[in-house]
Length: 245
Image 1 (cartoon, one colour):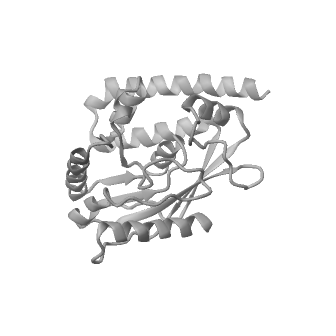
Image 2 (tube, one colour):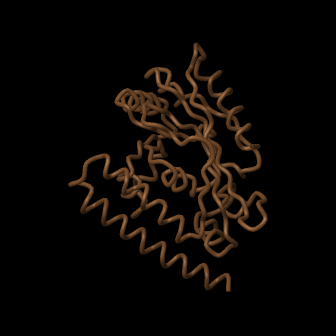
Image 3 (cartoon, one colour):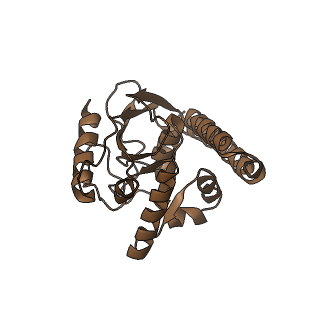
């Protein structure tokens, strides 16, 4: 039964992915930015539905920008979940741009790409982020820099937080959790860490029991004289508190 459920969900998900790809390629060039954002959010919600992921929002979703969202990172699902909750532009590793289908979808969703191994590219991305924040946009980053198991929280890197300082923009902490829909206990099904492959994580998700993604928004905060490292530490503490609420 689990295998049948998984195959059914995968087939439906592929259909949604192809429809999204066609929308980005054929329709987005004729759409304004606001309509594109609406379509991206609707697509993300549809994807969660076909994957069997329910969405629960806690706290106040972002108002119009400028705003930088910082969240803990658990799974490849995190971007879908945050897009479904509120459209935002993500900063992602440059490799994603070259992934078949997914790269087109990510670019259509407004992703800003970064070469993580290059310090010079990190500076370029910070400048670009600051410019987008100054233009009133909502951006999102995962300052852990990699995925964790959803139980523990890794240190937050402050490099990309510098963009909010440079632009004088607020930062809103966001906590992500995945729970078993039946028991309410933390679910490790969507995790994508260590030796996990994307295929294995995807199959666990689509063939496993129903999961609920919980997005908890904290209060936006300003730098108030903090440098990027101190602010990143304080943001991590805020996310940790939100995860425990």
